[in-house]
Image 1 (cartoon, rainbow, N blue to C red):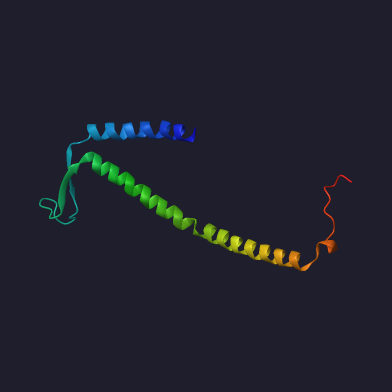
Image 2 (cartoon, rainbow, N blue to C red; image 1 turned 45 degrees about the horizontal axis):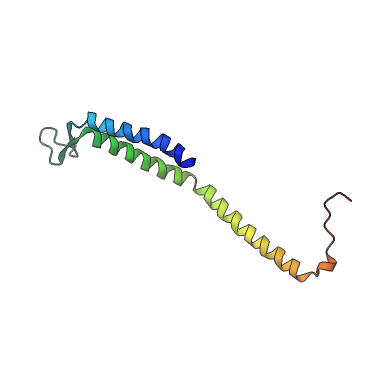
Length: 112
């Protein structure tokens, strides 16, 4: 069922990307030379859809990196909590093995 919903979302998006690419295949000059406007040394002619898709891809990468960096403190707290849980589990296990079962109170379910 999950694969169906995934396909239900991804197939129309892929179709829109293909249609966008077909409609915008005209060449666009991309210049990487900020000083010479008339005769740039670093300029390329590429289809418009490549420029748009590359900008979207770059935006996703930068946004993901910014999100990952912002969540660093939460990942650090989760690692610290996991380590603390492991220490407490090992201490609990050591205490349980040190005390005989007959010395422990009987666990009741509260129904007397």
